Image 1 (cartoon, helix red, strand yellow):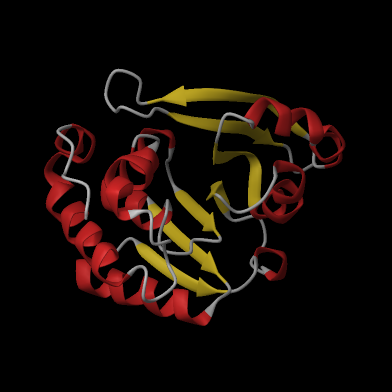
Image 2 (spheres, one colour; image 1 turned 90 degrees about the vertical axis):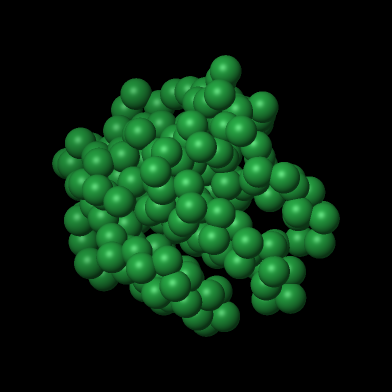
Length: 207
């Protein structure tokens, strides 16, 4: 059974909450059959996925890539919450790309572009003010895939779990190689949502 909408949804999404509701309903109806979410996710779809993604929306400006966007977590959710930011959803799997394009059209999100590609195949250069990702891979693997997409002085902003400090330690070599600075963890949503979100942030120096 789908988790009832938490009261925090209106606080987090504001006047965009109806779009969030429509996306959540679509994901609840089609997510499992299309291989986007697991069978145990419906009872926590709002709290664990939608709000977990949306509470970090204030961190972004300009043009942002979501690498391995999958079901649209966090990219589509962030695009709903921040219509003033340009979002590029990078996803290699055709069926997920189809889902993302369907939702972009259904929700009329004119601030979203969906690109079928792997991050390591990106040829567009350092054009993003930030790159985000959620549940893609460990930090030591994620940094080499994403740092080359970010402009000098831009940011990596990754949604992570409680293991985030250990992941930072394990990625020491990649942090040095890709000239990351101000690498730290931060928590968002405390006092607003039941499950605050942990984020790893880092500044990228291109040269």
